Image 1 (spheres, each protein chain N blue to C red):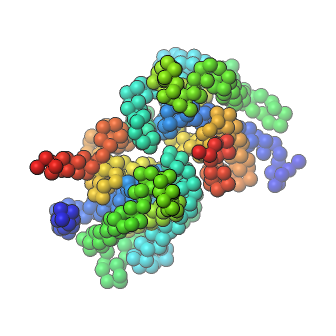
Image 2 (cartoon, each protein chain N blue to C red):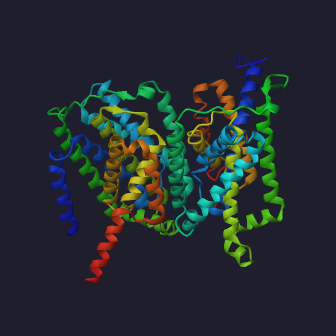
Image 3 (spheres, rainbow over the protein chains, first blue to last red):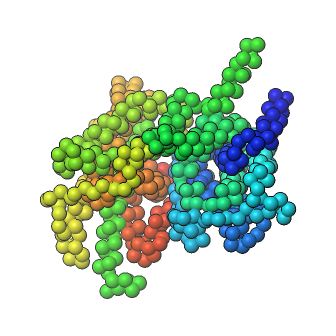
Amino acid sequence: MYQKALYTALLLLGLVAPYAIYPVFLMKVLCFALFACAFNLLLGFAGLLSFGHAAFFGLAGYVCGHVLKVWGLPTELGLIVGTLAAGALGLAVGALAIRRQGIYFAMITLALSQMVYFFFLQAPFTGGENGLQGVPRGHFLGVVDLRSDLALYYVVLAVFVAGFWLVQRTVDSPFGQVLKAIRENEPRAISLGYEVDRYKLVAFVLSASLAGLAGALKSVVLQLASLGDAHWHMSGEVVLMTLLGGMGTILGPVVGAATVVTLQNYLASSPIGSYVPAPVVLGVIFVLCVLAFRRGIVGELAALVRKNLNLG
Amino acid sequence: MDLFNIPLPAILSQLVVGLINGSFYALLSLGLAIIFGLLNIINFAHGAQYMLGAFAAWFGLQYLGINYWVALLVAPLAVGAFGMLLERTMLSRLYREDHLYGLLLTFGLALIIEGLFVQGFGVSGNPYATPEALRGPVNLGFMMLPKYRLWVIVVSVVVCIACWLVIERTKLGAYLRAGTENPRLLQAFGVNVPLMITLTYGFGVALAALAGVLAAPIFQVSPKMGSDLIIVVFAVVVIGGMGSILGSIVTGLGLGVIEGATKVVWPEASNTVIFVIMAIVLLVRPAGLFGKEK
């Protein structure tokens, strides 16, 4: 019941927010929030740390940009094709990575995403260091003109809510329960007769597709698909967003993404940014989270609320 | 004699260049493997520590008048000591947590170290002069190889073999292997395991710094020099498997040579060939070439 009220309040907040805050900034937050939710599905609920999610985010950005700019297809098709491309790449990467566990899983995903990065660096359609610029926003479903920031904002919000709902639905489903069982005790899940690898792979593909949706959305919003989106720094950033917000919580990634994007924006525009580079700030947050703050913002808050409820 | 219409000397010289890269892969993956063996942590800061080694040498030459030969000894000691400080103050708090936290912590540390150096020194590199005694070429018959590059190969092979001998053949190495196998039992026998862990981490970091000093005259000394290299080294480690010290040395050198060969045949693929090999190895032998299936 609390959850329902909370979500309704957040949704209302999302609906009125663009009248108070710059819509492009909000859309950026939503894109990264979706990216982090997708990542959290894998890390928080299946216990798989992928250090290569930037590859899916970046790939979908390029594919969507290409579909819109070169092929001139409608925006929704760009998003769909981008998402599918990321899912296909996720299938290939996931099938390789789930052959090893734990730290190796992280290293394999990282190495494969670096390979994808080099491919983007050399491939002709990505525009190399310049990226794919001037991606047209187009019309949504042929009617909504997305050149208006406000119209685009509501489309992005709708896509985000749909993605968020999908993650929540997956986590609550029997499938999600099996994922949690695998996270907690993989040998036991195997002995109970679950085909663990198949569950992991499905989770990986789902997570990669949603990460791709976020990347495609971002290339529409900023009208740019760039190499930076596919670099492993981006993979690190999404890990940080999830960790900071609280991994394994539903809302954590959203809070983490909002915090990190706000912080980056602040550092980029304020004079402090020129003394303290953003990577250092992110690194310090990383270290603090790992050492002192492993439950993340939402995790700590939830623990606090639970404690108070028990006392009262 | 030509192969694929490419003259043989050109092929051989690329292979030698590959062997030099392989020397760095071997030194770095050896350090990673030693740290992983005892601490169960993947040291993401390894690339940053390699960069610190190079910068320590550069800084010493520039401002303190420390020459290359002294730097070869002092820089690894200094960076290794820094590593031990990190282990004592931060890493040691994480041993009871999931191993992934170690990876995340060292990732954060790498971001901080590299970010600070970019801020302080910019992204462009600083040249480091080759020491007097190692200037000029050696004639290998099929090519002229700069003396310094030959030196790098020799040093890294000697250091790697020495490490292997120490670990496999001495009492100290026996403790280390015992600690890898079962740290609690080893502690019960009266060995100071936490101290051993600190020293081991310091040693692994010192190896990275040594590689950095060796690299300084070849590559530019720049804050980003380790950040992409470390990912290739991760792939090397996955291919070789962490199980054996010798395995990581052989894999490192071998992959360097393969990378060199690819540069001759298909230059565009030379960046990615190691990752492709990693994918193939994962399909055929998931535990890695020298790894043991758990």
